Structure formats: C-alpha cells, structure tokens
Image (cartoon, each protein chain N blue to C red):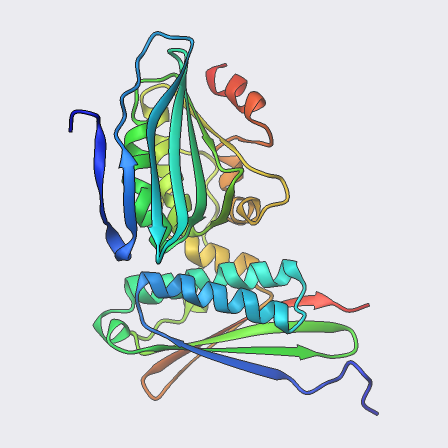
Length: 151
Length: 160
C-alpha cells in the first residue's frame, strides 16, 4: 500500500553553458528549486556545494569538448516512508572522468602539508550521501545525492 | 591615479570592478583604510573585499559575497596582495561570506601559507552555523587555519 509520503519523484531540469558565471546560475537554480520542492536547508546546502565542485571540475579539467557543449542538470526529489533524497545528475561532454575512481587521500595535518589541489573531490565525497557515475554515448553522467530523515 | 581610485571596469567573467587602491598609513594605532573593492555582477553586488590595519602588527581583511568560481576569480589576487603585507597577524573575516567553494579555500590556503612563511599567523572569523564552516570542516582546513567565531578572539590569537 502506498503511503502519503511515498509519492512519485519530481524532476526539474536546467541546461547551462560550461563557464564560471553559469556555475552561479546553476547554484541559484538548485537552491530555489530545492526550496520549492521542500528539501530541508541542510541537505540542499550540501547539494549546492557539491554541484559547484562538480561543475568547476568539468570546466577546469574537462577539456575542449566539455567547454564546447552545454551541461545538463537534472534534479530529482524522492520521498519514501523514512527518508527523502534530493539528487542532481550532471551530464557533460568532457573527457571521461569517474571521481569515484580517484583514491581517497589523507587530509593534511599541517598547513605546510596542505596542497591546494584535490579539495573539490574531498568536498563532493564528504558532503554527499550517494554518488553514482556512468559514461554513456560520449557523456559523463554523475549523480550526487543528499538525504534527510523524515521520522 | 592621484586620489588612488581605480576607474571602474569590467573584470573577469563580466564582473564589474570599482575599487580604491591601498593608501594605509602605518604607525597609527588603528587606521581605517580606504582600500576596498566591490564587484558587481549583472547590477548586483556579489563580492566585497576590504581591510583595515590595527596598529603595526595586525591586518584585518573582510570578504563578503560568494567565494565560488567567479567570486574567487575577482578577489583572489587582492587577497594575496593584502595578506602579503609585513604584519605579524592577519585576520580574514568571513562572517559575512555566504558561500565557500574549494577554489576559495585554495585562495585562503595560499595566503595562510604566505603569512606563515614570513613568520606570521593568519586566522579566520566564521559564523558557526554557516555553510562556510561546512566547507572548512569537510576539507579539514578548519584544523589547519585557526577559526574563531568573533573578531576580538581572532585578533588576539593572530598576534599572540
């Protein structure tokens, strides 16, 4: 039997250009849409932060093909009896890159050890509850999920 | 220019820049510097960086707005220059910052390292419940650069 909270997932979509200013537009869209879909503030903030890092990575490291094609964002908000999940699928035409294939590094213990690189992946891993990657028809599809309890 | 004012122009990512150059006077207990810059994007002010020198030992830098890709690109070089001043302590006040992405954290690490290499200390002021704190904690940077909730504690720690 379907409960009141087991509702069909809601989808929202945005297409952006692969450039820095568009990252902010994507953040504003995700923030606003999460509010419209009643996603609580904490998981919505984590999702916005992760999306920023994923898009910055595509623009900075995705190569020429990434910069010459639009990036498609698909937000899905799903509720079941015990928890909700907001997830964003980022589809880009950049070089194949599975962030899950990168070994987890140790966090630096001193400022002297700190390397300025690789922080984006650390944020994506630590601020998301679910990551899924697939390469299909020349596109990277990375899904980032943030969950919250309903009970 | 004679009055130290930089003409308004268009910076990276189409961000409008309108600011004053540094004209601090050293040796006075507290000097409010006219140096500040506001960065507008499509008519809305999104970034601001300003500073004041507190005596000879301490510089306080205040950044507001969003340190995401366009925001960081617009202030990173100015942050680096301000943190390079020969001060014992540098306080970077992020309490009015709305968002901190990894590119902004990189800029903070670069400045903190530069301050440390010349024998000084850089500390941060961050609102406890902000998403900025979430970014610092997720990357472990809150363990590398001291973080304080209020400016007076931060100033004391920076020159200790």
